[in-house]
Every structure is written in C-alpha cells, then in structure tokens.
Length: 266
Image (cartoon, rainbow, N blue to C red):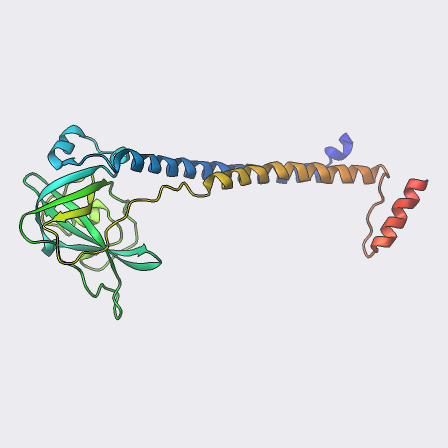
C-alpha cells in the first residue's frame, strides 16, 4: 500500500488534489468575505437610515472623520442649487434599464455639497436623457442621506458634463466651488417640491445574498476532492492486490462481471 501511495503517479494525483482544495478554499474564504461586507452594509442601513435628521454643520462638527459607518445618516441642508454645474453619471442601471444619475452642487452657508437628485433613463434617440427635471430655484431645504464617494475608474472616460462614477476627483474638475470631500448626499425630499423629479433612490433591500451557501459549497468541493482521491486510491489498491480485476478497454459490462466472479471463485 505504501509503495503504491508514494509512487510518482499517486504523489502527482495528491499534489493536484491539494492544489484544487486550496483553490476551492480560497474561493470559499472570498465568498465569506463578501458575506461579511454584505452583513456590514445591512447593519449600517438598519442603524442609520431611520434616525432623526440633523443639520449639515452639526453633523460635520460631531463627525470630523466620516467613514462608511456613517452612511445613510439623514441630514438637513439649507441653501441653493447650482444647476449650471450639473453633472451626469453614465451607465447607471435601474430596474433592468440603463440611465444616468443626476448630480447637482448645493451651496450652503458654509459648504458646497454634491447632491445626487435621482435617476433618469437614457433617451430614445441618443445616448443622453430626453428630459432632466430641474432642481428648485432659490432657497431650498433638502433632506438627504450620507454616501461615501465611489472609487475612480482608471481608463474609463466620459464626455464633458458627465463622469463614469460618483468620485470626488472627476466631479470636482467640473465644479467651480470647492466641494465637501468627505461624502456626497442622495436626495430624499426637497422643499419647495419641484414640479417633476428624477427617480429617487430607494431604501436598500436588506438581503445578504447567496454568499453563505456559496462558502459552504466551495469548502465542500475541497473536502470532496480528498474523498475522491481516497476512493480512487482504494480502487487502485484493490486492483493491485487482485481483489477486483483490472478494467480492460473494449470490454462489455458482462465480460467484466464474468472476470470479477471468476476472480472471486479462485
């Protein structure tokens, strides 16, 4: 048995089994990490989404360093929109359609903040919205929620007046004001209310997805690799001891059964 186990053939099979098990385990750990991220995102929504809104200045004063733990916190802002510096975010999916997110700078007494007012669909005849609802003019009170800037996508450009993602670097280049660099706001309500609106962002669905089941599946695959290795080795060992006949090519099932019965009779 040991001579067969340590033969070059079975050592090679063992190495392949170990490599497969390691790769499967890494995929399992990756899925576990994805689940942890999803659970953390759900916890942030549950903790912050329905809390009482606070003023922008009070929030900035109480939270000098804004992190993802502060996402979805509701804020109240008073100021004016700067519609001439409106920016569109390309390729934003919603309900199976592709459109644009509308970003408009909002100037308060102390800061200029980017507000994502909502989503508009791509136009019928060109790669641009047919209609973009205008923000309210004059003094406006906005209730919105904190979102952290998205990462910049290197090598992915956009036409003038558009950006690929909601990232500070690209948006700042198209604004004359110095933007608040810790976060942006997704709009919830505006007072006075405009005649028409982009489609507002909806509350995230609290669903961690299938990551936990995928984690177990990948670890099960790693375990099954060793089970399969052990079963094949046992079969080869039984063949080498003559317990079962060595399979021959071009033999029928009946011939193999006859050979097995003959071997058992002897």
